[in-house]
View (tube, helix red, strand yellow):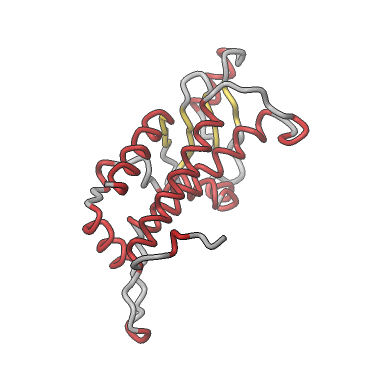
Length: 192
């Protein structure tokens, strides 16, 4: 059956694609935040399970950011089209999107650190930890080391916080419940 989201204006298409990506992000958050049994025949280990959904979450937020906060200003005048930057601005205005209301949805550094992990390893001269899961069984001294030294991707299950490093070496923390609330609010705004 033909998917009807492709009907309507181009701006409506972008709105519907943003809503789909919000749905994808919310599904991933559900799998990350809700306690459930892990099917180890699919996910192999606990790290694979959590970071699979974190990767999907970050990709979905990156797609939403590409729609409403695209920084790319390439010149397409020869083609007679607007730039992605201009299109994002038009879409924000049409749908009443203020990027300051959704800072965690539009934090590109988290997505970029995950997507360009190879560059982050080089940025830290391959002296950076990765794929850490912290839970109630993590020894306090290990928790302290992981939280106080650069690690590329860490998920604190107890506090439901995703922690990463930006290209400039800044620590970036994302409280997943806050991100979830921002995504729900953005979806409600788009649904009008």
